[in-house]
Image (tube, rainbow, N blue to C red; front, side):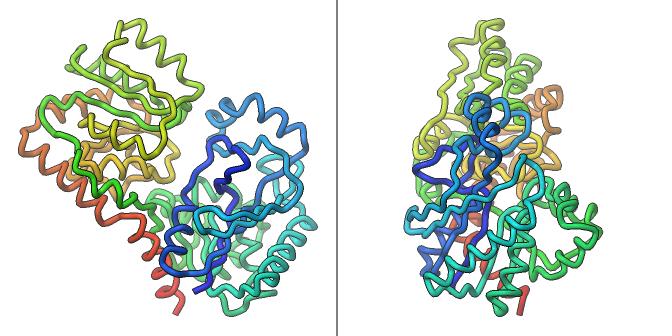
Length: 405
């Protein structure tokens, strides 16, 4: 099967993008392994040069405030490369300012350019799927109408996509109806989208998956009371509230009897360092900085409690990675892990950024019996086993096909 993927965020070896994510690449990589022919078109955001210059010096602040990927490098020419066997075509997509509509002439030229690249490789997609509602909904609809009439089409909705509806004009519902199937990265996103658009399109849940290598490890987390060996893996940005973990610990019954491994970095690091110094927690808390992905399981194996209570969390793959190790997990309520983590069953849910509730949950966990904790750990791991990267990639394609027949 031939799959054309459109995305505005994609990794590359030659360009560093702050707050980037490999989510789309993980899907494409699995599809290639399954024998599908895949072309990824990375619509690389390009603005007036001044914005890229600012981004070079203020990337951390921009990421923290706006929760977005930041393209500091100005590029105005197409780039073609291969990443892990996936053919990627990075096409600059110009608009004067961030968070503005793409000018119609630019949009038309971009669609024509994608058509030309597909023609070059004699690539007639069976499926056109795009991540992020805008600018991709007009692209997908036009590509199907003008170039690939037999292709099945899909739009995967990420964070706060409804804010982009204004770029589609008053007739946005018609554009939505043209798409064969929608994918949602989480249940809250699905509810949010249907509420704001007043539509209920054909859809499926488009979850990420945990790498199989996590599931084959023998050094799983040891779930033994007290549950006090804590780990956080993520950026130190405002919406993730990394410092609130320390405040919650201080308000819990743990006292100084804990360890906390912070994996990541970002603008909130100074707040964390201040809390460590004020409470003399230099021996309890370790700041590892950013760590290679294949090293994270080694740190998780030393822990028995993973905490990240972020807001605007589209989907947190790191939660699944912790669950695959058998770790007790505390995630945010009404965010990306809702529907995957069931509170008190295979993990726990807390209001985003609420250090008082987090302290209560930490104490609640430590009041549970060893048997109860073992059951939660086992169910967490069982959840992760169902959601491997291979399984979710297969399900993605199966959902598009079954819902468009």
